[in-house]
Amino acid sequence: MKIAFFDTKPYDKTWIEPLAEEYGYGIKFFEYKLNADTAMLASGYDVVCVFVNDTLNSEVINILHKSGVKLIALRCAGYNNVDFKSAHGKINVVRVPAYSPFAVAEHAAALMLSLNRKIHRAYVRTRDNNFNINGFMGFDLNGKTTGVIGTGKIGQVFLGICKGFGMKTIAYDPFPVESPDFEYVSLDDLFEMSDIVSLHCPLTPDTKYIINADSLAKMKPESLLINTSRGALVDTHSLIDALRSSCIGGAGLDVYEEEEEYFFEDFSNEVLLDDDLARLLSFPNVLITSHQGFFTREAMQEIASVTMKNIHAFETGDTLVNEVCYRCDTVCNKKEGQKRCF
Ligand code: NAD
Image (cartoon, rainbow, N blue to C red; front, top):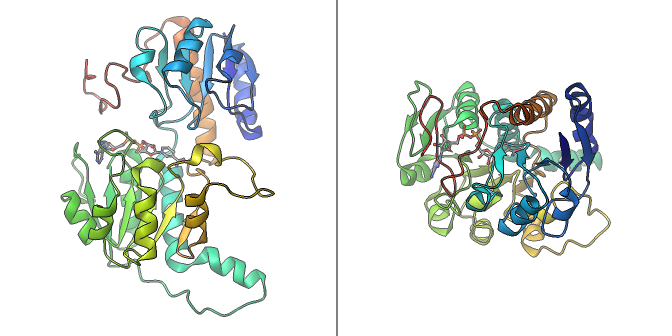
């Protein structure tokens, strides 16, 4: 199998190269993201391996198909960047559904703790020999309420962590699961009751802008919004308005609606041209990380291992257990043990 690996960073090679050798696969690592301009580079390869900010729209998929690519191997869980209708019948799509829910849930917890206790600002202040603590007051998490939207693998781990802090745990998910660890409420109640709102659902047409002017208006003025899922779950302009008017207490974001151009890259010597991102970064009560929730040793090992197993299953004609359902446009919400939507 010949694999074209897009949007490669040095840390990807570290985990993928030894496994590729084991399987006897030839890999070409491209630093470019996959998009309509770079898709031709995949010509002559059987598989493209892509990440969260690669573009797999209809134009790209048609180029890949004509170039002989047979499999798209996503080395991530989310798949909102793939046009499944275009891929249907042309190219199979596999993903890594679960590599470490702990990695992302723990990062969400890190954002929650840092934002609440202003660790990001304290770090900068003490580095400048300024030991004043004015403005750094937070609140006890113990006894407060955390509301999770999306009680899948990551959402459940995050709820468990919050329970460990002595928090009340509530959740919203149209596909509820039985759990003694949290209680389901309506979305409106979740916004009204929560001191922390953390997003753990996938990006679909239903969840796009699930955080908007209306939902933000329902949230408590001191509440913190945490988003480690996908940027477009949050309407950025409404979030900026809410922060400007102190409608909520702050936001911890590992993802951003327009992150594709900036995240994972170094722009430290350039002027930031994205005004919304620049505005968000200007708020003292906003903490942004660059889509690093997944980035632990354990997760990287698992991503590499499952990606190679997915490709091997395709090569040998085995069942593609991690194939994404491409009959539905978005997410079929298949749960383990349940049938697909088709
Ligand atoms: P999962 O599939 O296990 O869980 C997703 C949950 O969302 C499911 O329970 C599903 O029923 C629920 N859901 C679907 N539609 C919903 C809706 N309209 N409202 C509320 N809930 C809804 O997925 P997971 O492994 O827990 O991952 C969650 C998300 O985290 C992924 O979709 C991905 O976008 C994001 N993610 C981010 C990173 C990162 O590095 N920041 C890494 C991995 C995953």
